[in-house]
Each structure stands twice: as C-alpha cells, then as structure tokens.
Figure 1 (tube, rainbow, N blue to C red):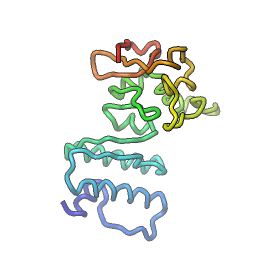
Figure 2 (cartoon, rainbow, N blue to C red):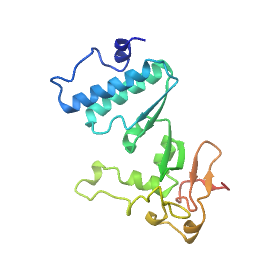
Figure 3 (cartoon, rainbow, N blue to C red):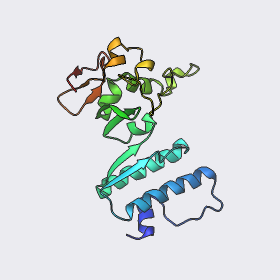
Length: 200
C-alpha cells in the first residue's frame, strides 16, 4: 500500500504540509497521518492511544467516522484508549474500564454505560456534562488517584468510593459478572446492575 492510498483511506485526499494550517486542523492532519502510517503494513489490529485529545468536537467526529469506516472496510480490529467516555459510546462494541492500572469493569458498551456495576464507572458516567444540567456544577469523583508505586491494600478505589466497606481496605476486590461477557471487580457492585459476585 502506498502512502497516498493509506491517506485516502482515512479521508485525506491529498498530501499536505503544515504551512497555512490552523493548529486544530494541523492536529487533525497529524492524526490522519498517524493512522495512515499504521495502515501501511495492513495490520489486523490498531492500538490508538488518545488520538483525539485536544481536538474540537467537529474534528473528533470526523476522525471517529473515518476510523469506523476504515475498520468496517478492512476488517481491522481497533483498541481505542481514551479518558473520554462520550467518544467510546459512539465507537466501541466492548469497553474495559481501568483504574490504577487494573481493569475494574468489562462488557458490552451499552450494558456498561446503562447499568454500571463498579462505582468508578458510575462516577465517570456521572461526570459527563449534560445539556439538562446547564448552570449546575459538574460532578466530580472526590479524592485523587493513588500512586501506582504505592497502591493501598485492598481496593485501590476505596478512599474515593462512597460505597466502601471495611473489607475493601483489606481484601482484593472479588470478581463478578453474568453469564455473558460482563465482568467487574468490586466487593459491593452497584444495586440495580443485575450482576452477581463470584470468586475471583
């Protein structure tokens, strides 16, 4: 595959130079170029780490559209790493939520977003701005992420969790899930999640 062909697959119709491009458009073109380079070897899997960070919503939407089209057309699998759940909601089939270096919840995107089992997942969803909450303070998860060099015993999220119990401070989180692909790590999964605990 030639460079022009790869650029064409991600929606760029011509090779351009940075001259005369505004910073947002230049970042967009840089993202296109990175994806195009990844395509040159016809990979089975692309890992994209925060590729839309610092881009405005319109440009983000264009990149997401092109990436989705690319994956459909070529059969390429995609792992998209991001802190932005609103991006994942429109892109992913499966989501893995990580906290302090560990996956704390995993499952079909609609199930995880509609019925989060882990308090951290619920906190992330609650912090997404809503049009229905104009003029109100944005919700935040209290506290700070612990250092990966000095993780606390038990659940790493417990000091920030409103549902934490004594067991959370001493024992590793238990695994839980359903009969499908849904999994979580929590001593006290959120009520209404419909999920049960099982031995990890």
